[in-house]
Amino acid sequence: MALARVMICLAPDLDLRLCLAHLNHGLRGMNADQDQVFTKKFAAMHGLPFFCEQMDVAALAKQARTSVEETGRNARYDFFARMAATHGYTRIATGHTRDDNAEQVLMGLLRGSGSKGLAGIPPSRNHRFIRPLINRSRTEILAFLRDLDQTYIMDDSNQDPAFLRNRVRNHLIPLLENDYNPGIKQGLHRVSRILHDENLFLASHASLAFDSCLNKKESSAIYLSIHKMLALHPALIPRVLRCGIRTVKSNLRQITYEHILAVQDLVSRAESGKHLDLPDRIRVYKTRHQICIKKETMDLRRLGRLQKQAKRLPPEA
Image (cartoon, rainbow, N blue to C red; front, side, top):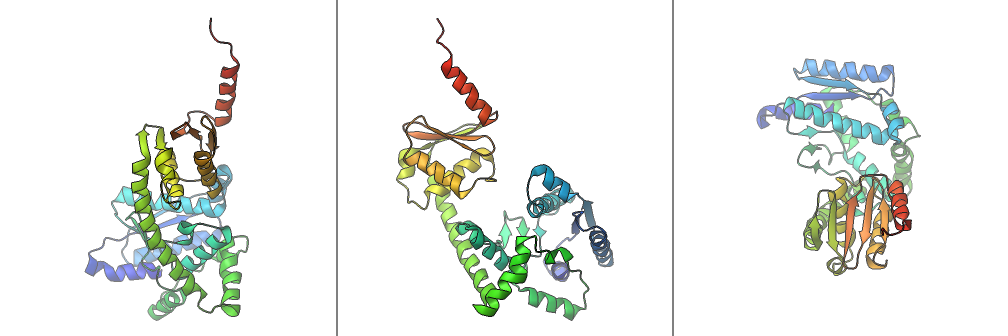
């Protein structure tokens, strides 16, 4: 609600064309329906177009074998992107706060994330998603709403300890504030901004390094020079490998730190002729001078069985 009020205030001076988009996740029964009605009334009160959909996120999560949190997030961003494309909007603003970012960084620490994960929630992504409130605290935002006498709804699922973010928000951060550092949220946010800038710098160098190592690119495979890769600074090698996998796979979903370490080991230590299997039918082959990252057309286990059978066949007369 704070984000909506800020954007409404800025719209005349910045010549903004606004709408509200609301996804009902179908997770909280009547409470979710009340949120939808509340948001629709707010949009009507301020003369804003209102776009809404309902999804059974729990069923989608079960089908995809992913967490409800991840499924809900993916569903939201997909919905926002579709609405923007359909109705001609160029930016998607979300209401993430400095507190949200601090929680994200702390969760990254608990999971053992790398520098990208510890960079937290970026202020903008792909020049399309923007987060105007990311440098403001939840306390400031609630005070802003009180000053405007603006009603709002608190999501009751934010108290559910089944979700890691809620345990971090409601238990771990208060413990750290009380016993270790009263400014822990500001400190975590500051760390994320430093790492965000450093990651942008490294990403630009990794892109150049990837181009220098690239021997050949096909529709479903790329070939990277082993000699050129091993000559890079060690910090760039994992990033070049991620660039390669992303180029072939189109994303890095299910690709973990351990996967990247295994590919590095293949590059630097394994014999020529070895290969390594990754999620989503990605196979990495090693020859004497290069590695090939390829998206196979069939399940890798089936492919392996067929290759073994082929080796056992006698040569043709």
